[in-house]
Image (tube, rainbow, N blue to C red):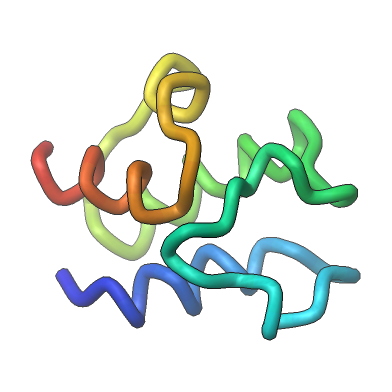
Amino acid sequence: MDKDQFLQAFAEQFDETDLSVFTPSTKFKELDEWSSMVALMIIAMVDENYNKKITGADLREAVTIEDLFNRVHAK
């Protein structure tokens, strides 16, 4: 699993947020576009792209995109 590819796939779940905003240290829950719908899309993206299951708790406990990447990578 590549961190840059994960970052790109993560960013693609957001329709209105500029791609330049997304870095490993981005606190994704602080983005204006963050919502429960985006959270579900992230869970589905991880399942589809990486064949790994993450939960709402994984999202709640992750602060940055890198935190979430590390959680997915560890599963």
